[in-house]
Image (cartoon, rainbow, N blue to C red; front, side, top):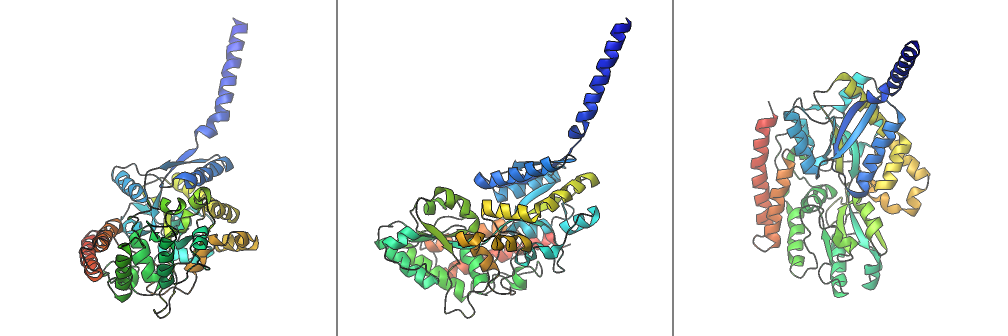
Length: 441
């Protein structure tokens, strides 16, 4: 009996010791991170989470893909209402006004970092990026994550085949070169764009320093009015309508689903996000580069500066102090200079800190891959104006659909450019007034 008792006691001691050893791992606080990244960019997200989890044992970040940008934002808001929101949610830049208006649903990043005592200097981040996600006082509401801008992707082999010596810089040159490319065998598409409203209304307006909307495109107040039916925007759409008739320009949809037309070689000039880099690098079987967005040389002061695309990380409300401590530590982890440089090189998205950008330059990174510096040069081309700081409009997902619908009517020959943009402005203003009723208390 004595022997058995001793053996049992020893076994119990071993079990207790083993339990104590594994307890810290079991007790790690989970941080749920919902995102919209696919392909190689999903790999980047997973690696960041794994690296953070390996670097400490108190918290475990769990990334979950929730669909497109719009799907992810809608899922997060629905989850908050149901009481089970994630801790961190990736929201595309045009969802900023909607998230700001979701009182109680979010925890502003500047407050989070203050309350948790984590090192945080808003001035360390690139102002062209942080301005989009900050209050007028410079208080950061969300954490910049994957920032991009519109660039022009170019098939250099196609240009050579068409006898075009230089990458075009202006819109008239793009139109002329697209005709040459079409004649050289690119019969279904001389040039095209993804994200039709982002490229042809939002970025076009900022790049030419003309308003998309009043009140600094909504950054200075919700009571903004749309104004993108001016001469520059109308002229641009008129030209696209004309070129669509023979496929010198060919419409590629409201989102980025048409980007494969560039990597397949069908469309030799294609305007879309700089974040398209990973796909171009892995899929294009031809010599390629990118260049700044074209501009109209007869518009005074053009080009101005571009505005950002991509997304930021919003911290959701209603979590515990310990959970918020973990979220703050993860955001500080993401801000590390070497980590930012690595993400920049792997994804093509912009480095979000000044130090990371300077390190990438000092390492000579852009000597071999100048196309990754193109969006940064665009964003910092000139000091931002009221027309080029960014935009903050409520119900932006729905607004874009309305604007795209009107542009599609024009490209189909059912409306003139002016009629389409006038209608887009009128319909959009009604939607903005509806948003104000829910956002402004």
